[in-house]
Length: 285
Figure 1 (spheres, rainbow, N blue to C red):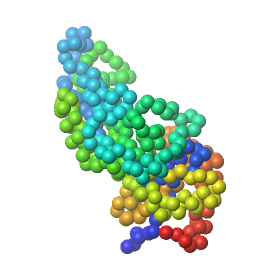
Figure 2: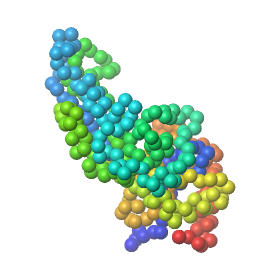
Figure 3: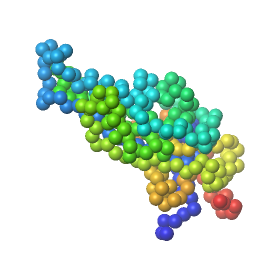
């Protein structure tokens, strides 16, 4: 009761494009894990043993290749929404632009799940990412077959999949594909997914308020593509969530040169000022 509220209106994350005001109604979750293959106590001479003894780096690379195909399509059953992108999600993403602005990464049309738009890929689907890989000593290579290999990976997932099934699903997949020797370690949810229905009355109220203040269309997305602690409010407190991001995908997030654009910042101040005004006028859900 002490934390009861009608709605949470907050700000974090990037817009879909720098010049497109955005409302996110949730976030994708993060399920992280390590893939490890340890074959021997130390390295062995590459000339005497290469071609005779298993190379863990090659073995692990092929195991990762069994998780995704060469163009990033996830191949593990139960890692993807069983019924595809929900109709409500597909509806709000119809025509949704995706871009990072100047200095952002490229959008590769043939990467990821075939048949989905760029917006559906990051706001309505799951993605698999290799965060880091190591075998041998990259900074000081020696003529040896390495003793082990390791990769740290994670899944960005929507609320339409159950992360509690991810580890077991991957183990089954590895066993079926002949990679039962790959060990999955440190697996677990780092941040839970969340979503308020995009057509929730508070979401539409915020959209109407912002559009009235800014005089331009406001794009609704079912969840931010990154991670935020929205589940605390949506799942634990039962509060509808309205994230209003002011950043952009090319902001160099988490880097020493992370930065902010002036135009979205000004629009953000205007949008929130308008919402606070409209809250005081009544007529809220």
